[in-house]
Length: 429
Image: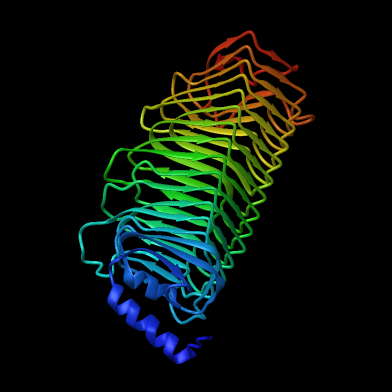
């Protein structure tokens, strides 16, 4: 005998079941067990798993049960601009594999009551697609998160935003793709030991990636293998008020501001980074080691080096080529060593020393075919050792010049090769 259950009766049965099972089920499947994702969240046990089958779900979702894992098998959640797509309000939640459309914000992580002093922890947002949000694509406040392998497109505010105000929390933002946002691409503020790696950000209306670590905790920030291109403002900005930075193998291209800027008060390592076709190339402030980086074809200077507060900086084995002003501009309120670099075909000076104190040296650099001076010195007691300074400033004077109304002085001049003209005044030796 064939049994038929009418639609209304089925819905009544499912509602009855959801009331009976509330908070008890370790595993729930949508729409097999219940019709909506929110119903599944409401009946799932703490630490439970929800599987959402392929289909379009026209709803918004709030997760307040700790430890839930939500896995999508092709599910599309369409918020229809009625609110935020998914709101996570509990610890230990994993959201994986969803496509989230048309939310005020796509994914939000924060306590329901913002006065709660304890931050959320162990949140994982992985392999989701977030599109066409009125505000942020992924918005995190006071939570420890892993945001990995997501795609965020068409956000009207910052595509991925992590904000931590006063808590000892880390953040991992890795493998995400952000494009076509009206404001910034990716922003992490206030995290301890933030890691931002292997993200791609393109065609955003603001800064591509901005990271500022905690100002009240010692921190080590890591920025690795990111690609930022065609953003209206700066490419990559990293500020570490208390601690150091490791910035490796990033590429920043065709952005409207500076390609890469790093500021830290403890020794930072920049290696293998590339800035090209930005308004400005690459800048670093504080104490640093910059090596094997390339800055090419930027509208203004290639590298901007600033050693602060009696600290130390080293700039070695880098390439500055084809930039619109100086190849390297340096200011040293401490010790700075510039050595073994190739600096050529920049439109103005090869190396311009704006200010330096005793202990700053240029050693074994190849400085060729720059439009103005090979080395322009406005610093004190600059040491020049073993540099090759050739074919610079055709018709514009000597290759090595003391600039600034006599302010520039040279303490040591040994083993340099330079064109006729040399140093403009012998009493500077």
